[in-house]
Structure formats: C-alpha cells, structure tokens
Length: 85
Image 1 (cartoon, rainbow, N blue to C red):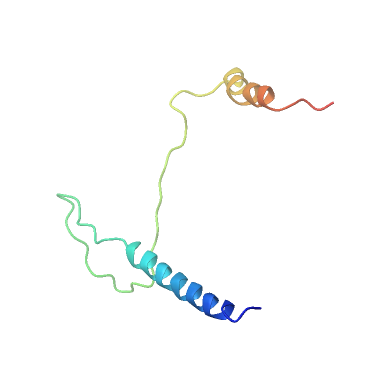
Image 2: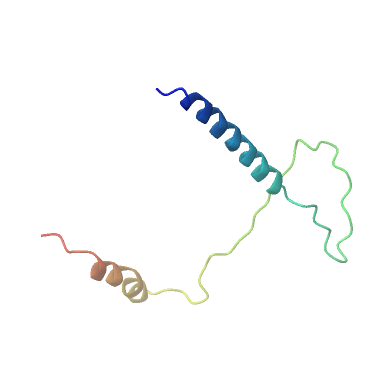
C-alpha cells in the first residue's frame, strides 16, 4: 500500500459526501401553490398520520384481442431470439 492511498481515500470520501449533500439539497420538492378555485387546506391535527391515495387507469383505449396480443408481443420476440434446438 502506498503512503498516498489513505489520503486519496479520504479525499474521495469527502468528495462523495459533498456531492451527496448537493444532490439531497437539490432534490427537495418546492412548495406547490394550490390550484385555482380549490381553496386551502387546514393544518392537520396529526401530521405523522396521513392517507396516501393513488388512482390510475392503465387499460388500453381499444381492448386487445388474442390475435393482436400474439402479433404485437410474441412474433417480434420470436424473430429477435434464436429458436432452441
């Protein structure tokens, strides 16, 4: 082990900490103003207890038939990979 290696490790560790701190500070979400005509929220009685609600719809606009699914998913896969012997 060379005498410079511990110094380089320390410098690398400090540089990593500085970069991690910068990333953490930059990744903070800004305060978002409420949408127009939605009113404002009151302060919660217990900010440690909340409900997180997510709603989504991932259905396609047009339902896929078995034929469509076969043509879109299976045939390209079969053409791109070699068939087993």
